[in-house]
Amino acid sequence: GHFKFSTSFWMGLLKITVPDQPANRCIRRHIPSTQYLLTELQQDEKQVAGELHWYNSLNPQTLEVEQRNHEAKAEQLWQEIQTLDQDIQEISSQLGEIAPAIVTKLKLFKWLTKEQTALRRKDVELRAVQNHKVSQKQSKDTDLDATKKRIASVANKLEQHRTFPLSDRQGELSRLKQSIADKTAELDSVTDRKRRVDKEIAPLLREMENLELDRGYVESALEVAEDFNQRLSLADNSYERAMIHKECEELFGEGKPGKIISERQWKISQLKRDYDKARRRAEQVAEKAARRIDKVIIDGNNLCYEGKDFIGLAAIEAILPLLSRMYEVVVVFDSNSKIRKLLNTDDYGLHKRLASFAKVHVVAYGQKADETVVKLASANEFIYVLSNDRFGEFNDKSAVKKGRLITHEVVNGNVFVHDLQLQAAYR
Image (cartoon, rainbow, N blue to C red; front, top):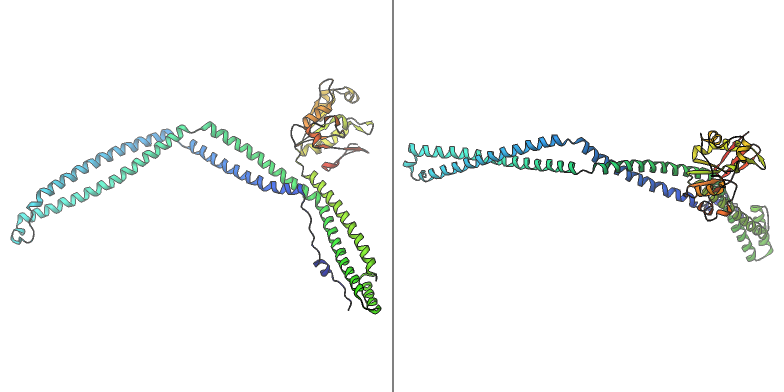
């Protein structure tokens, strides 16, 4: 019999996958590695800070007094032990002297005499005293060992304190604090960049998902149409073929599987092209959004015109507050007097008008701003140029070679920097 496909059937055939964008993947890898390095730095800082706290909290004079007290105690204990040794030896001699005179119980009558009773009592008393002194000596031996260990421990602390590399550890702590501040700022920056990338490419990723979903539907329909076509080729008679055409029409609204196959194949090709376009746009948007930009060098003269009309500093003054919130900004002007003459100002006047948001530099007399702009931007990989000039004569400089050039549009009283998602009205 005939059949129709439910939504769950179509969905079950789909395998939607959206490729991970290289720029965003790089950022996601960078976040945990930065967090790991930050944790290591914080642990190192804690250790060095602990060492400095130990050094600052330890008073050498107090330790020296403690050391002398321990040494005096050790000397006293040693003398007391020597005295106890002598007493024990003397008691041993006395016991040795009376031992031969004491008889056993076998000589009962002599054993019961007053003399033997007195000797035995003296023997017991001497042994009791000797045991007590032996116990005292053992206690003092233990105390002396502990005192010697305390003497060694205090001596070790004094030596560590004396040889502690104070200036080195203070410098190390200072460097670690700066590294932690830098790494924290880097983590904040890369996290912000990831959020920016995610936000920018989210609509494109949804578009890609929808295109994949549509292609899945079309490919599934193509499989069914091809199945109808296969059944037609295997049909035994015109009645079976008529029933297959009817079943195909009920499902697709078209009874000819060949036509459906042709239409679906064309549609799949179109969806693939649209998907590839969306993917390329997503990669381009992600690449731009993922960029780390620390500083922007503005080609000042370039931004003083709307088309051929001179507009002075209006566009620069409009866009600078937005740029300076995110980046360090330097505005570079040519040395020729045209701009200043048109503005009716001098170098000081340029600085005064723009210095709240950017550094201002007017190149030396006889020089062009282009070379200075490109050289400043080539100092490191995180500096970009804002200009519509392509700087073709400076292709050897990294800012130009690596494409760190951002264009702008000045039109109808607005300045646009599309790459940075910025727009400002200047009139």
